[in-house]
Length: 101
Length: 493
Image 1: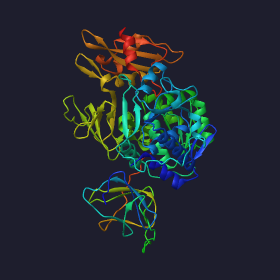
Image 2: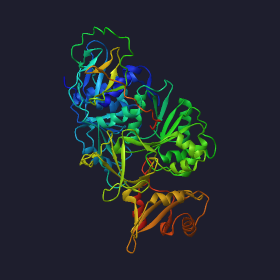
Image 3: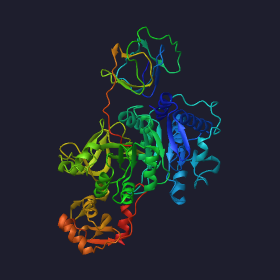
Image 4: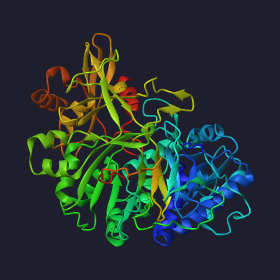
């Protein structure tokens, strides 16, 4: 599946939904709890993940894959964890800034 | 990313937390989201090309903004204070838009396409639910059209795409990080980039947004106390009015953790007095332009506190706009586009994901992505950015470049001077001569000769104003920017 900027992806097995902030430089398979993500609006059986013991994917956090430049924002949280071609996708650390607004 | 996602996430996570308060209207995140979707439904149903917002600071502002985002059409805020002859051409330049207005409508707008601002909060507004909203809005679509303040010419329509504004918000704000009791007081107008950025950041952080329709120093202080406001943003003229109103008394606003300021240059004497009166409040100076989706550099509370404590380096940096945000690159160049060494002034260029640099007439960003701000400034050895002012305002006297701000800073430090502007007026011999228009503090007296002697003492004689006039007030935009062209016209006459 092509991952383009702005598109919304959903986990077929859990509640995770993502928005693509930056598309990957090369084709990559993005999974959540091992299940390949689908386009939001597609069929989602929702069977859950076999291993849901981690911290899951957290709403409002950005996840970035260094190898491909892929960056997503979690719009809906869930127990599944993200991986790109099998590599765990870590939270992109944000440096807290004083409020300017 | 689409702007509407910011609200969608906040609504699904924060649900019944209060999102916005204005007058006797209070909307939760879920209610704001529902109201925005109703507006979106109406926009889609009507086939509107955009939404012109010509109203005050009010709950209807976020409803209209996010309604436009959900519908995938541009949100176009306009200054409701403009006269009919200025407003009508702007409205007519955007045909086919829904117009949200105060009672009485807007000059140049089709009454049939005009909606009273107050109706947007009503559940009866538009038949929601039956209209399908676009499932995908391209991040490259225009989200907001903002008219720049036009201090150096006629207003230009700056285009901010969804990707610019969302890059700013998700790059600088931690989602839902605010304490449920946190509240932000907003007095900057909706047609100003600071008003836009304010709304997006506070909403994404999960802060209750409290709108004040018209600025009054006592009402502003009372509202902070009554609502337990934790952050507020002001333009320099507002802070100057608060400081004058306090007249040496402490501000007594214990809940206010952060007071940020921006939108125009802050006179140092005002800032220093404010630091004294707002004990326990952290100050933040934010610098940015409409074309950069708001803030690109910050001087934070620690820098302000160090300056207040008397650290000489920090005192100098109080005149800076701080360091650029992560993800923003800055370069200072000379007139021939060559990078300037540290500490040398030149033209400020910026690059980053939140920077648009685009107008309805085209983009001014170069092939490498650099945006020429047309501001003059320099960067010190530690990376602090100092902004002198608009390059167009630089006075060139006998080949010497003189920044008006340097002279103005000296003038406003004089006890008898309340406000001052320095401009170059055409001169056959020198190219330009330095002219100052000065507003005196009430009950004080100062002659032009005394003022010139004071300047010679603190500046080189080539930077001493040759023409000095006294005025009752200086022409400024509502956000406090000096209208230098008017002063030049006045002094050249």
